[in-house]
Picture 1 (cartoon, rainbow, N blue to C red):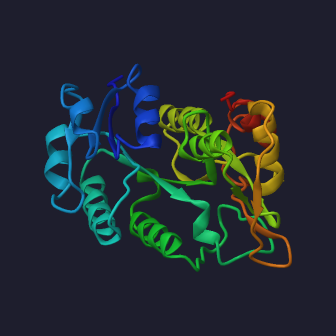
Picture 2: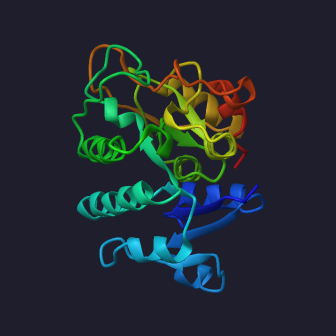
Length: 273
C-alpha cells in the first residue's frame, strides 16, 4: 500500500509542529513555516510559505500530498483565499484535507454544549472565520474532508500553560472565567487523534475535546495545583451572571476510548514548573 504523503500547513506553530513530530516517523511528512526561518531552513521537509504574499497552490502541486492538514494562522482574508485553493486542489487530486477548526464556531450559543450536527453560529470574528472556511470545505465530497473542532488546547509546552507558568513566577494575576463551562484537550492527545483519523481514512466532522465538562476556573485551579505549591492571584472575569458553555462534545463521530480523554487526564498531563 502506498505511503501517505502529508502536508502540514502552518507547521511552525504550536499545534502544527506537534503534528509534524507525531506524523513524520510514520508518513512522508512535509510542512510549511513562516516564522522561525533559521531553525527550519536546514530541514528539507519544511518549506517557507508566506500566507499573505504567496499562493499555496504551487507548493501543493510541487509536494503532491495525499493528505493536507491545515493549521494555518494569520491574516483572515489570506486564510480564506488559501483554503479556496486547498479545496480546489483536493477536488481534482487524490487527496484529503483535515482542517483544525474551533469550538468558537458555536460561541453565539451559551446554554448547551455543541455536537457535530449542530448549526454553527458565532459572535466573534475568529468564529466567523472558521465557519467560512468550514463552509468552503463542506462543498467537497464527504470522503475528502475532515473538520476537526477543537476546544481550549493545553499541554506542557502550550502557550496557555507557558502564560500560566510565567504569571505564577512573576506573581501576576491569571484570568479565570468562573461561569464558563468548557471541555479541553492537549497537543499530545490531539496529535494521536489526527494520526488515527489519517490511518483509518476517517472523514467528516469531529469534536476532539474531552468527553466531560469542567468550569474554567476549576480547571485552572487544579492545573496550578499540579504544578506545585503556588499561591496564584486569580482575576475572576464575569461575562454573564449565568453559566455559559463553550464546549464541543462528540456524539456521532466518536473515537476509541483510549483517544477520548477526560479533563482530569488533561490536567494530569501538565508538567510542574
